[in-house]
Image (cartoon, rainbow, N blue to C red; front, side, top):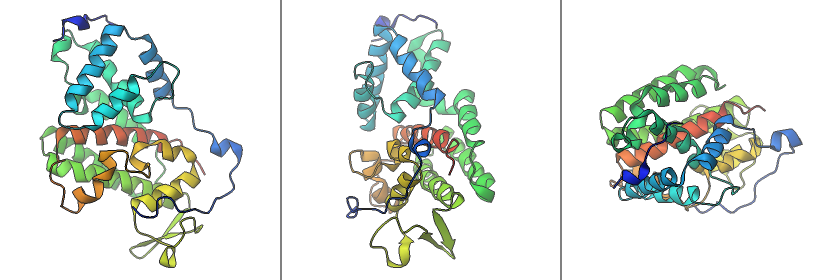
Length: 271
């Protein structure tokens, strides 16, 4: 690793019971993710100056997107603490700072436009088993990169939210947990209680079902069924046009990190 002198840098049904599907112990285990392990090792090895610079960078970005403070707080935990999925995935790309000659020129938000981020995303995407729609999803993903590069965040944000939900739907269909009937999706195992005709109508319903497929889905911030994250809590209002303050580069970046972590995990999921 190149050593830089960082000192020079001036829903109502969330709590209702669900049907539990018997699972074998192997299926319940979190699948090891080499990227997350490598990121955790990197966090243990970086200098105090680099760590301080990382936290300061995230706190500065939080002026426009408060979720960066959530990531910063997670990365400030003592070594040995359980680190969040998105914090470690962000760290995987933060390592690119070691490739620049002058850390003052490093723009964390710009890494989405780089070859490394996009190739890593596509490599993870290629491992997905989501049926015949895979190429269509890939086309949408590639266009989201173009929207981000063109600074069309008002288009990029809803596309990324759509990808996060659409890919989850595709995985649940592929593994037999959802069944499509015309334009509806049916909860095959009747996991979510109180639904007329067992028709799934929200991301949170899908997230509950995904937890039964593999508990690690609940570790992915995009599918956490609570309001602890503004990125999740404002999703409905953004997509329905009543929240217009979140079409920002910072929000897009967070969603790209979430998408990367989600796709990386989904590629390892097996029934």
